Image (cartoon, rainbow, N blue to C red; front, side):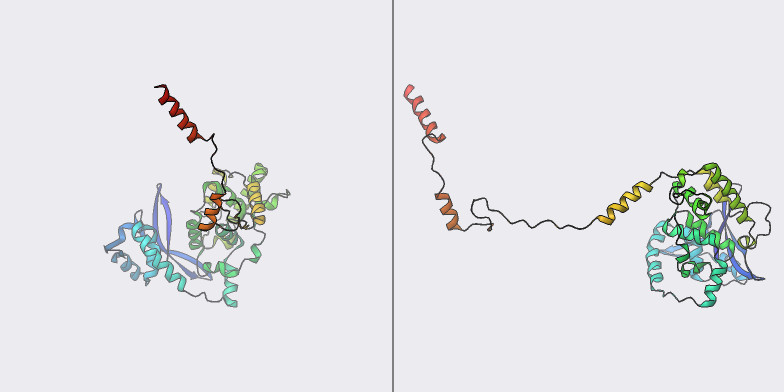
Amino acid sequence: MYLAEHTIDGQVHYLIRESYMDGGTFKSRDLFDLGPYPARYIIYPGGNAFYIEDTVCDALYELGVDPGTDELEEVFWPFLEPRVRRLVDSARQRAKGKKKRTPIGPEQERQIKEQASTFDKRRSLYLRSGEVNQGRIGNIPIHLYKWVLGKSRDEIEHTFIRMERCLEPSERKVYTFVIFDLHRFFTESWAKKIPQGLNEAKMDKHFLKEICCLSSDKAFRGEIEDCTSLNEHLIRYAVMFFDYDFGPDTFWQDYVKQFMDARRKHRPPPNRSSVSLIAGWHKRSTPTRGELTSSLSDLPRPTTNSWPERANRHAGRENGSR
C-alpha cells in the first residue's frame, strides 16, 4: 500500500492505493479515499500513542487486503501531529538501523534492471547527492534501486513526488536539466557544470522533444493507455522547467572551495617557552625566593632627584615661607 494524491477543483485529495501484478505489468488500484483531510482518521488515546480508525481497516479487509501496522503507519505518517511524529520517529529510526540488508540475487538484479529505467536512476542519483555531472551513473551500486521492486509506475512516481519536495526553488530547473540529460545536445565543454550559460531556445526545444518521447514510451507509461496527451506524472517537470529559473552560478565558488580544502592542512601552533618578568630567567616561569631577593638587591637605588625627596624639599620650603 502507498499514499497517492490527486487534485480535484484545486484541492488535494488523498487515496490509499495498492500495486499488483496483472498480465506481466505492475498496475495500481484504489483501496480507500481519505479525502482532503486524512488526519481525521487518526485517533490519539493518550500520551504518544495513536491508531487508525476501524473504518479504514474494515474497508481494506472487505477488499481482501490485510493491512499491516507498519504499512498503515507509513501511509498516515505525514498527517501525524508534529509532537507525536517527532517522538515516535526516534524509535522508527532505531528499528530501521537494526535491519540487516539482504544481498541481491541474480533474479532480483534482473528485475531491478527491468523496472528501474535510466530516467529513474538519474532522478535517484540527483536527489541523493545533488550531482549535476552524472558521468558515473553506471557505477552506482544496483542495490540503491532495490526500492522499485514490486511497484507500479504510479507508486514509483508518487515516491519521487515526496522525494522532490526537498528541492529548493533554485534547484528545480537544474534538476530537470540533469534528469532529461540535456547536456548531450551541447558541445560546450562546461555544459554539464554551468547550464546557465547555454542557449535557452535550443535547450527549450530539446526539452520538449525529450519529455514527449518519454511520455509516449510504453515502458514508462506502465498501466496508462492514453499516449495522446502528456503523461500526468510528467506535467510537474514541465512546470519546473518553464516556471523556474536556474539558480546563481556557483561553479567558481565551488572550484575555489575545493582548491582550498585540498590544500588545507592542520598546523599546530609552535611551542613557546615561558619567559619570566625578571631578566635572566628565560627557562623558569617562577623564580625562587632567594633569586627574587638577589635580583631586587641589584636594582638601582633612588637618587636625590627621585620624586620622594623632591616632594619633601618642596614641603619644607612651604613651611619656611609660613
